[in-house]
Length: 57
Image 1 (cartoon, rainbow, N blue to C red):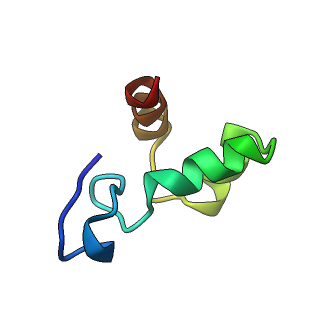
Image 2: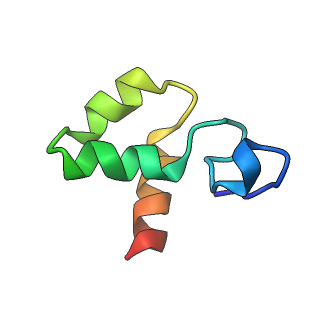
């Protein structure tokens, strides 16, 4: 995860992307599988997504 005031006003995003971590959480809260999120956001790796979920615990 990365937070930079120049990228989406400091919203935490996946490193090397402009995809907010909240987007992943929104997908999962809506009952969508992780693979669906990864298909829609190919710039995010499975490892990044799993790592973000570990941090969110």
